[in-house]
Length: 195
Image (cartoon, rainbow, N blue to C red; front, side, top):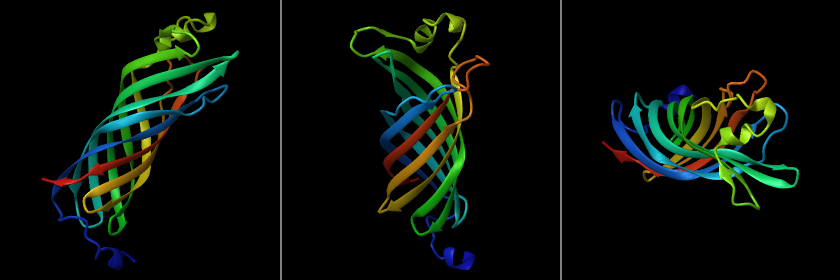
């Protein structure tokens, strides 16, 4: 099988390519007491790829990612919006021509957060929203995230379709009672430019 797959060269060894991409996030927050519902959001950015050999490539990216979740509390719909600048680093293993399995590590830095209560015009930061509950008045929202992305991509005529799941490792809040983490399904399309 290994000898057969080496015949499917993706790009020449030692070459670089750049891939602008745009796509859709379906994210939610896995909470310690109750999971939130999925929220749709945008993901867009660039990934730099380095082809090590015929079977393996490395990719490093910079992605703007809209994440969060939705929940209904006492008849009021609440949407938690958490926007990150994510930096994924992935190993891509090509199992056949154009088809790659990928896994790696992703660092995220919070750039914007909002909690919106539907039915009213009130919009506040997620931290302010959490502080409405007296028992969480001193809880702070973490400004970074760490996740493990795993996925698959398919390339044809320099167009790359990518599907991945990013499992959050770091709790969203600095409170020992909370284990809330991100859970993000991501589907994107990009175009690969050889450098």
